[in-house]
Length: 102
Image (tube, rainbow, N blue to C red; front, side):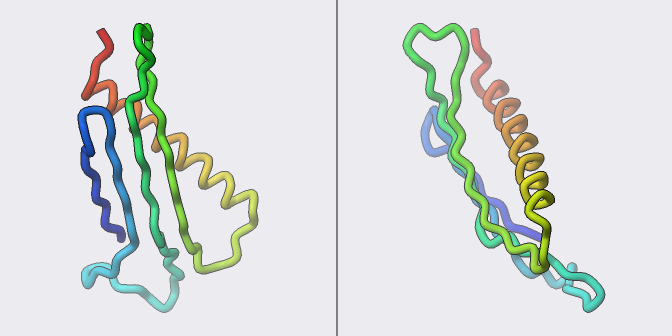
């Protein structure tokens, strides 16, 4: 379970952050290990060049997690890569919705 906060900083930039939280409806159990999202966040800014034909957006993403177990490096990298790809696709969809290119 995690808490996510996002905000539009100005007309061309957005930021969000997430952190694991404890919730009484989802208690930890003895038979499962729950990982922790220590802190995750991103900053996205529309960064078009003057006269550009296509919109351009820069995204900076930060993630610090504790899986609470030993995870082979290739699994952690695959997870991070997959999560990042999905996140970027969501960012692009949202930016296009907010600022359709004319």
